[in-house]
Amino acid sequence: MTLLSTSTDQLTTLGAGLRRALDGPFADKRAAARAAFPSDDLLRDPNLSIDDAREWVLNRLIEISEAGVLATGVPQSSEDPGDIADTVVAFETLAHGDLSVTIKSGVQLGLFGGAVTNLGTKWHHDAFLADISSLKLLGCYGMTELGHGSDVFSLETTITFIPETDEFEVHSETPGATKAYIGNAAEHGTMAVVFGQLLVRGRNYGVHAILVPIRDDDHNVLPGVTLGDQGHKGGLLGVDNGTMRFHRVRVPRRMLLDRYGGVTEAGEYASSIESPTKRFFTMLSTLVRGRICVSAGAGIATRRGLSIATRYALKRRQFVAPGHSEGVLLADYLIHQRRLLPLIARSYALGFAQNEVTSSLVHVMESGRASEEEKRQLQTRADGIKALTTRFANDAVQEAREACGGAGYLSENQLTGIRADVDVFATFEGDNTVLLQQVAKALLGDYAKIWGELDTAGMVQATARVFGDTVMERTSASTLVERLTATVKRQPEATTLV
Ligand SMILES: Cc1cc2nc3c(=O)[nH]c(=O)nc-3n(C[C@H](O)[C@H](O)[C@H](O)COP(=O)(O)OP(=O)(O)OC[C@H]3O[C@@H](n4cnc5c(N)ncnc54)[C@H](O)[C@@H]3O)c2cc1C
Image (cartoon, helix red, strand yellow):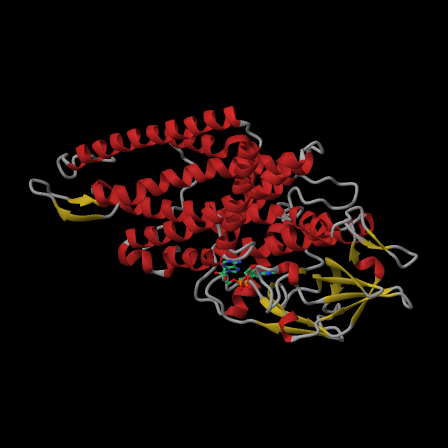
């Protein structure tokens, strides 16, 4: 039995209205993407071996790319501004199918391509962007190291300027400096964006990123580069994650992605941002789209899981009620409604929030008139939505799996695959706990600022307002308890969904 609907778009009036609400300001882009990506063709056979899964995923990406829809919105050169909302929509639409395809596209276009776009300058754009978006140049995003994951400020890899030859030398001094979990490193990547400490004439200018070729045209690993295959994972089996180590690998000076800091022809370090810490966070802030995409993809994967469970609940019957010839639909059990409906409601709420954050991303990255406050707020919101949506995805998909009983546990019904794949969304693009700490820090900073700016009269008024809000909350809380008590007193199974 398969739980996946093969029917095409035949929405009820209510369904069409809900879709319109959820699509929000991106309705046209999402409609175009849905039409271009047939999600029924994107499901991977769970029986494939790792090697076959990787090959299948790469071939799917190539097919979608050749259909002209994979790199929608991705800039192709220094002249092409791209369309950031299109890139988010293209990524999330892929999440209707196999999540390995989604993540591999994210590694290639969002991380590798995104770093070249946002940290590079004209030469990098003209030299590489067209080949990146056509998949001719497959690449990696080498930030995480064995020794440093969440703490990327302390990366150990070094990028040392060699004035005599006008080159940089990329080096992993210790085992802890080995790049780890890197998508495309194990098999398919031929170039990597490598993050490391930039050393110029004995001085450390902090973390910068540089392009390093890792395999030649015949796919042989280049001298000085050691690549490892991290093999079987808890999910995303179609993505070839691996390790990278560098032994004094030389690359020309222009390979440094130097939008925020680089070495001049005279061999001197130059940057428009004085403070290394500020420079580092400015660089990272330009990569915020990746986090927003992961959140968007998790949102779609969650809705897929909930949709499978809901459709099953509308078909599956268990226990015949007295006086009836047929069994009761799962969807007619109050307990089943209470398991699924709040999750569906929350997935809508997070979808609306996701639209807000994506709109802020478009404003900050494309309008050219975003304030520092708006940029800072975008980072905090991206951290928050990513942590909440991916945590929710893990919880909701597990509930959906259980709501389908044994059928939910069969691989052909997708839920166990989605659950396995979505698991790591809580870790990559920023570990959720660390992200929530950053959100808390930003909120406390805002709070301290607001209170710090108040005079005595303002302080009294603000205290009164907080007190009033607390009383309001308590009052509405008691109303809620009354409503719940009344609901419990109703006849069991008095509410029907269908
Ligand atoms: C499948 C997969 C694909 C990936 N792809 C890439 C890629 O292509 N490129 C890339 O660069 N990286 C990639 N990563 C790496 C990923 O970004 C890191 O795993 C992530 O940043 C977390 O780092 P870590 O694994 O070292 O965990 P750690 O940072 O060691 O965290 C471990 C635990 O410690 C907790 N912790 C850490 N710091 C604190 C703190 N200050 N306070 C409280 N708790 C804390 C965390 O919450 C977490 O639970 C990938 C990872 C995976 C699993």
